[in-house]
Amino acid sequence: MRNVLVICRKELNSYFASPIAYGLMAFFAAIAGYFFYVATAIFVARGMESQMMGRSFPMDVNEWVIRPVLMNVSVIGLFLIPMITMRLFAEEKRSGTIELLATSPVRDVEIIIGKWLAAVILYASILAISALDIAVLFLYGEPDLKPILVGFLGLLLQGAGLLAIGTFLSTLTKNQIIAGTATFAVCLLLWVFDWITAYETSTWAKVMSYMSVVTHFESFAKGVMDSKDAIYFITVAFFGLFLTARSLESLRWRA
Image 1 (cartoon, rainbow, N blue to C red):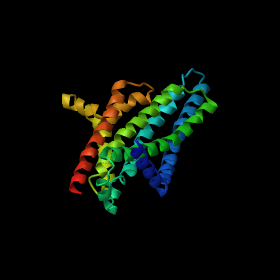
Image 2: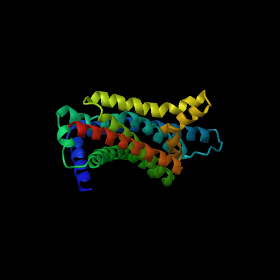
Image 3: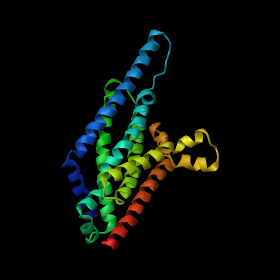
Image 4: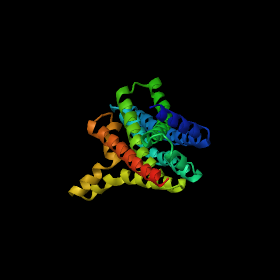
């Protein structure tokens, strides 16, 4: 466990010692802030229209503001995750330190979990920015807190799974651009798999739809925590880390 924390701390230092972390946070703050502003503006406009027409209009801030914001934040993650993971092992290969890492007395699983954990912590730090936006709603309204917490848990689980996939893809090349592009392509595919059910109802289409991250995140965005959705994201994370371990093992043998 000590080696995991050392590697995790080293990776976090490398993120924050460069413009990477601050650039990602600035990018996320601008885009997520815009989505939050638009959702809030629509909510206020619909409420005022309802009052002017003198009719009752049940306005649920969780449904009108928080749920759309969480769904949009999950989309932003498709762009953030490749930028977070593309350097994890690709940079080690480019600089030539991967051989030292592969022949070190540190176990492969400790290296992998340490690097992946650092990526998850950075991603969680970025998500915290959107939590500041949503916190503003509590100053002027009474949104339900529990669905918000469930939604952010879903974002974190989704991110953890996709970050594990990105970690594996980073071991396959020493070019960070290629690693980032491949990670984005896989994340995008996992996002759009559920589109198949719009025109196909066969068994294979249902399987593809089940593999989509959207299918499993929607319940979290609604504030509903379903164990099968949590298990799906945990399984994706485990599968990504397992592939990373096999890839790193092959590097160790070659080293």
